[in-house]
Amino acid sequence: MKNYFGLLLALWSSTIFAAPDAKTILEQSDRARGGGLPGIVWEIRLISHDGNKVDEPQRLLVKATDDASVAETFEPSRFKGSKILQVGRNMWLTRPGLSKPIPISPRQRMSGQASNGDIAATNYAKDYEAQLAQEEAVEGEACYVLDLKAKHNRATYDKIRYWVSKKRSVGVKAEFYSVSGKLLKTAHFDYGNSIQYEGQHAPFVSRMTIRDALIDAETVMEFGTVKVQKVNAGEFDLGQMQ
Image 1 (cartoon, rainbow, N blue to C red):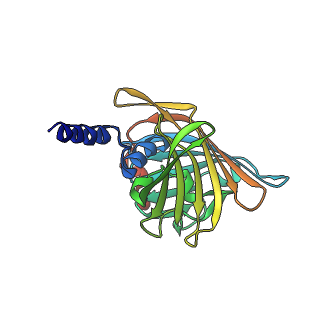
Image 2: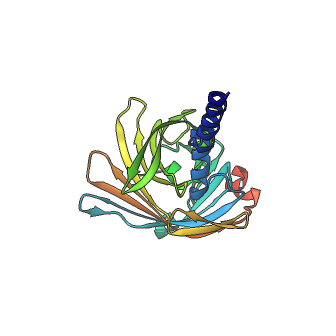
Image 3: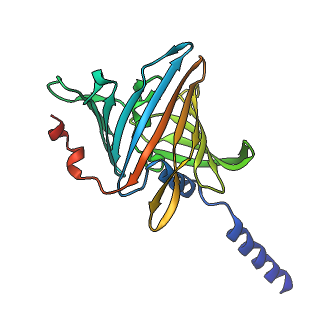
């Protein structure tokens, strides 16, 4: 009987202290990058360089919900008024002078190392199947390491290896791979912003630094003026964009 109760205690303890499942880890980390929220608005500033060549900075205003986003360009002036609309798994580009929106892929490069899908709200939990691979420290911070595989070909990347802080529940590092397993680029994340959601303050991404895996090329995405707020459904109406 004593051994029986000892076994029950061991099983109970292992259940209580076991790591959460990969999907839960991913869902929690998505919130710090716009996923799973009722509505969010923020500005993005992109600065890219390729070797010694520095591209002209870009500034966008992004409005997003859990399933849709629209990013409008304000700088540089020659691109002002251009918009990228994402609804579900579909994405379109429109700009002044175009007769109708152009279907585009989230995988196409928008600026430097940043793809179109990188500027939308992150919803990895919907776009990827997650498996908990191991635990590993990143710059001294204990992390879960998740292997993500795209559920469909409209995802921004085929495969991602994603490091999520065990303490903060935010993604701190990512490696992006092709379907063949080739490393394309890496990213590191900083969380200097905060949002208020469900009565609590929570960290939100302030910088995403994306580096090409083969050449000296880098894009820095800076996130500012972040607000959790309801976004009018009309903002995501393709007909209005036309």
